[in-house]
Length: 309
Image: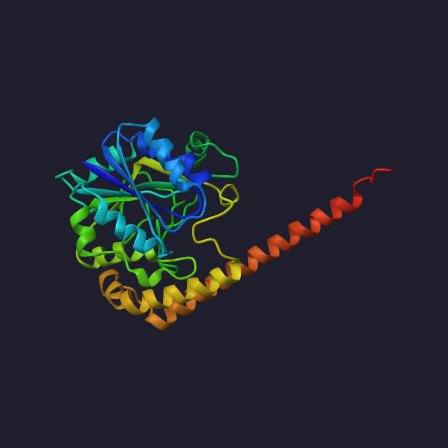
């Protein structure tokens, strides 16, 4: 009934940790792993997992050259055979009922929706999924579920009921026909590929589709420090450049439609300036925090007693 599509690149060790949580999903009949030109043992990890977990058929596709996450998602959709597609991540766990719960939301005749996700929890370093779930509860901050200034879902927002948003995070369930109508945009593949998972959702939203986020199930994203390599990993200043570049393209393409649909007051250029300011401010805070940690580490090192040889 459901095909899972997981794009991956050089994260065999991490994929080995999270893949069983996809293989154990009740309503998943196949899992499509799209390997974006990895140089590690991703193929072996997928093969071993397929032998161990036989509930779902596992399909492995490997790109000969690096094409990016958006192209990997599109290729996964083409290879999938089910009517519903659940996008996974190579560094995120699913709760055991994730696929089934989202399927119920899509098939609920009382409130039809076209795209659904559970709550996304960012795990702390070395934290286990069940620990992260208990810590998170129904959210950890009192902000709105959607951040207009950065045009993204506020995944940590506290809310108790299901909510409808213009877009959610990447681990979504939707119909294959909708993905064929609105494929992922490969022009967002440069750098950190920011917005590549958002464009499909925004095109669907502007096309009249409803996007739901439910508290009834969760997915848990590994801490950044627990994912040592792979994916679209780049440095903080490169991230700033690509965040701004991709967001400008995103605003050029979709802001007028979103402005009309959501009643946004700011003109596009002002909205982009606010976004840039937020990004620069966050980078400055991160750099200052990192510098402070480095100074404290050096002080502690200087004060530690030296061994006498």
